[in-house]
Image 1 (cartoon, rainbow, N blue to C red):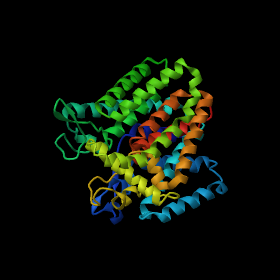
Image 2 (image 1 turned 120 degrees about the vertical axis):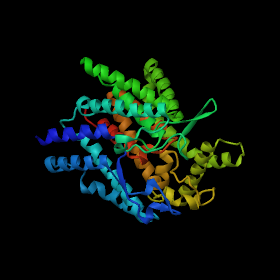
Image 3 (image 1 turned 60 degrees about the horizontal axis):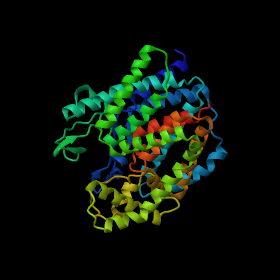
Image 4 (image 1 turned 45 degrees about the horizontal axis):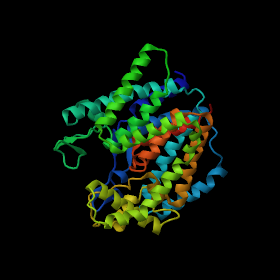
Length: 412
């Protein structure tokens, strides 16, 4: 088998298996907070990591690609080293930067692989993946429990609507389970399916079988987003739909999309002083909203203390007890639900500027070629990212985002 064919098969397998969370979790002492195991701190080896290592290893050995020159990476390496050094738990920070390097290589591979074909390499396996993992979500919703059996080996966790701490929603006074499929949370499932849905919309084909498969995938993706009861995904879908209709009717508005990241970043930063006012107003917010406000307030305190280099990648949860306005010992150990604030908190203003520059470059390039099938998914990531963190913290969503960035940087 030719190395190029081997890599294509590996890549297709990777795309299909992205939603899985089959993994090996390690639990060293520094992966605990107050004796509580914290998933975000645990060194984890996923099945998709193993596939990716083989894929990238084969590519690097066979093609010897021209990676960025050392002189270009000296500055970033120094800043990364400082970020690891200032972290209270440098082991966590080091592993998070290692993950970013892995995701960078994946995006770089997609952007530069000459044999890459969007339809055959990515769209087809993504269609089957969406169909398969959406069906798992639909059956979970119907049975109000996980399916078990062989699905355990895809990373499906065991729970039901009666499991403490599981995501539920109220329907006419009855508490019902929100389906997870094989994702860590229904919101992550919804975000993944929403982005995949738009990517599949952009796939054209004259083959009847492909057309039918695409329609089934699109319908099931919509259903999985609906049954996930993810309000953030629903609202994002509504906003993006209105935005697309406006630019379709008024083409002169298209260039304004370049300002979307700036507006979202400024809005996120403005939340920092406002969160404290909301918390002290005694307005009686729902528990979920109050928790998010507490995390935002904690993020503001960390940023004020460590504005330049941050608290260290992955160390938000580690430092949360000492910066939280809530009691130090808490079972709700999660990152702030905003990717811009999380990056600002953990990587400092320099990290936020670097991320902002990356997003700006991608949007600018996509606008120049008019690739709305990629602009819309990126906007979905940014909008859902203002109210959740899964695009930068969870394996499945990180991989999809990496693929999206890689495709965006490919030459037309």
